[in-house]
Length: 113
Image (cartoon, rainbow, N blue to C red):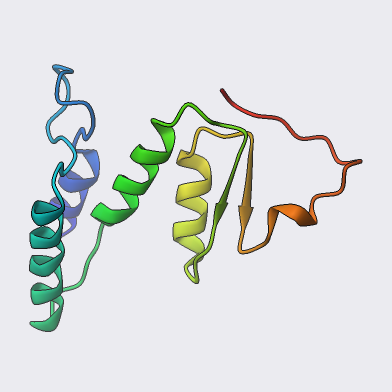
């Protein structure tokens, strides 16, 4: 099992036009829904998801392809997800489970793009 997890985690996911990419993003909603359905079916049969989820990857990719990069907000109950997303996003400030308007104007902040 550990070997399969290591292999999945080292897989190069990204732009399919790059020679080093092994797997591109799920491009269509039906395809995305089918993948999620297969994951849920496996979990119902007792399987556990041992690597970062497809949905998390898709969210980060979509956010990072935006022309904006000043700040982001992440709302989650999972600390590992919060840490992963906050490090993966190309933004200057990331709020975790809080509201952006709570920022004091005296606190420095900046963007990424």
